[in-house]
Image (cartoon, rainbow, N blue to C red; front, side):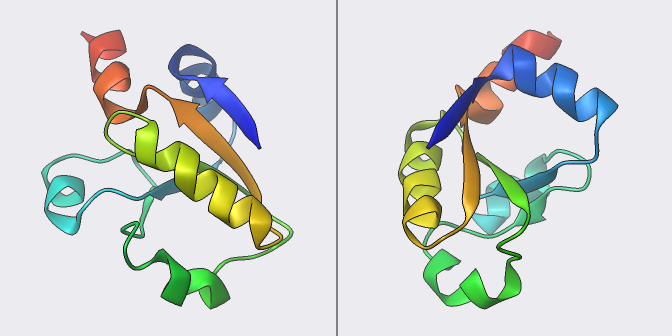
Length: 97
């Protein structure tokens, strides 16, 4: 599994169209989310694998980065390319402040 810092992720997403999986609860996603992010709550992900493209790279983001690391590993174990965003939405918000 690959990991990326929020700083590098923030630069990358400004220059490229990324496949961002936001695995937070739907309520948290509705309160704030990144443009073009796809809401796939961690608890629903096993049932949503059919929707994902195995040729795409997915940047997995959670609130603090802990769950996204687990989910990125899960995706990799199922044949997907996944990148764990270290620090998650919490650190992205701090970066923007």
